[in-house]
Length: 150
Image (cartoon, rainbow, N blue to C red; front, side, top):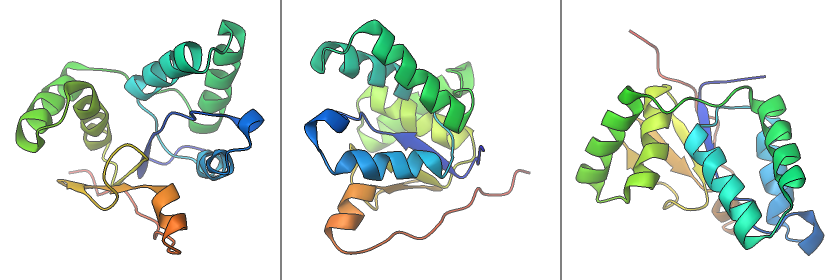
């Protein structure tokens, strides 16, 4: 199931073993479907292997699960790169974060699900939604749909 309306960016920092309640929230979001960019998967693989010290097989299995739920990742294209350059300049973002926003914009996503960007921040048509902040504040975010393509 793949919807272009949402783009996922988070790092699953602790996994189920730690008992982190955010893991279940992240899994629920993945099961609802959406879109993921290659930059997000790159960061996930880096954090899982370096910070969490997961073995390569475990990282690869996790990436396979994400792809099974969300479909193939959005590629890093020249168009995404150009959007990221503009986004980094306009919004004073680190370039690698801007790549995530650029991929969401290029895919026509209306919602960027992330724990690393400010909840409620807008980048053009893309609204950042932190599912963990929404739970902590007792709110539930509404469903966002993709803007029509011209």
